[in-house]
Amino acid sequence: MFGVVPKSLWQRTNPADNNNMCPWALRCMLIEDGDRLILIDTGMGNKQSEKFFGFYYLFGDTSLDLELNKLGFNRDDITDIFLTHLHFDHCGGSIIRDPKNGLLVPAFKNARFWSNDRHWMWATEPNAREKASFLKENILPIEESGQLNMIGRNAGNETKWTDNISIYFADGHTDSQMIPIINYKGKKLVFMADLLPSTGHIPLPYVMGYDTRPLLTIDEKLYFLNKATDEEYILFLEHDYYSECCTVQQTEKGVRLNDKGTFNDFFGG
Image: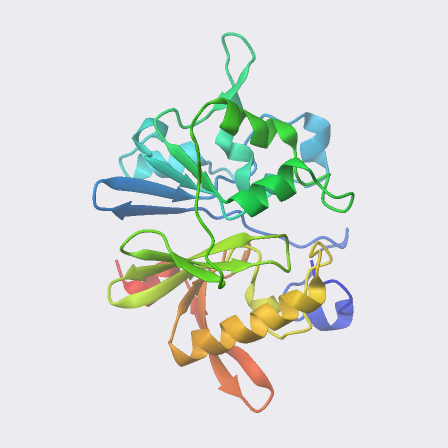
């Protein structure tokens, strides 16, 4: 998760257990936007084999269905699934096995699924480095269902998707990852996906070994974290076990953590 950064440094923010493993979150985000109910990312899902899940030591007693139910919704209420990218831990919950016939079908039968052409091609014709992360059973059934939609990428790295959501495209972690920037209560809330997995990744050299273009990730982080400082973004952290959100600030050492906490700490109630 921290690439070439020595453990003696990264364990200050993300301490490891006796098996040299750290706890990580798989947070999704649900957005009510007019008559649309948008879910950003869908987690790992539960259709993979016991051996597959055994590599990751899953823990906790929550699930996507339980969390939706707490809010008075269920899967059939979702109108849009926004997939930041198609690595299994971000899209695996998009597809389930039909208990009647074992076929792979969308878990959200009434939703449009959103990706982009560049990333879809990257994921369906994977390079050797990412092949183990792009699982065809998570991806191809979306297209086969007829529910797949593409978001256009402009010549620049940013585009508008809805009246309240714009997208920053980042290519360091994987090609054409989509980072949604959401207007909410007069503030900019950013779902950071794998551009910034945790507060421990704020220093520029702290880049995941998963990233296909780590030097580009550093450039993208520099640009985006400077912008986050200038425009006072609130950063929503998909993988940080300890903090749901954070803000950043400029220091003599560059951009560093300013504040961290729960979503409600930043927005209330």
